[in-house]
Amino acid sequence: PRDAPNYFLINVQPDQVATVRGLLEAEGRVEASFYPMVRGRLVGINGREVSPEQYQDRAQRLVAREFNLSFGKQLPADNRIVAGRWWSQPAQEPGQFSVETGLAEDLGIHLGDTLRFSIGGEEVSGTVTNLRQVQWDSFNVNFFVIAPHGLLEPYPTTYITSFYLPPGNQ
Image 1 (cartoon, rainbow, N blue to C red):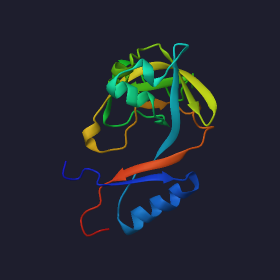
Image 2: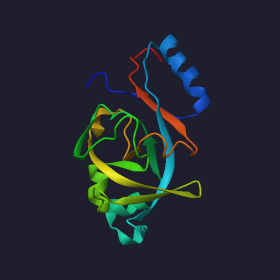
Image 3: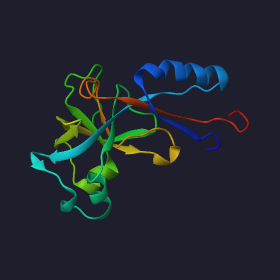
Image 4: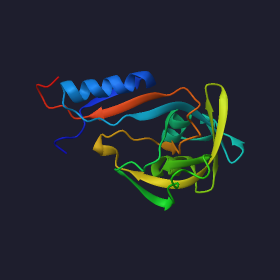
């Protein structure tokens, strides 16, 4: 779209979100949503270890790197649940993951699978309770894996946003 986000801010620290949001609103007249981001490496699916050597092509590259994980209460606007259900408010069980359909297909992930991520040397697990189709070409912030509040919050978190800034308003 003509007003698709054309700027991205990454690595905004938790104590900087309010100040950066205020600056964008005051100086750029931009309303930006900030999303938490936690870095984690997928290390297990259903109790079996995961390594890049087990996969080919894109799947191999995905498993070889850390994921940008997120957490939240609301299904992102440009995401659609295609299998399972989004968690209730508040989530009854924080140990859940929502997985993007392309990632699920590439890595052979299904509803009910248990995923294990290594985050800062600690491991966290959760059950895949839904699969999401993501509209990647919206240029909005999107994630391969999202958890409800509670599961990822104890881990180091930064924030990310995307927004449209008209030419001449930099």
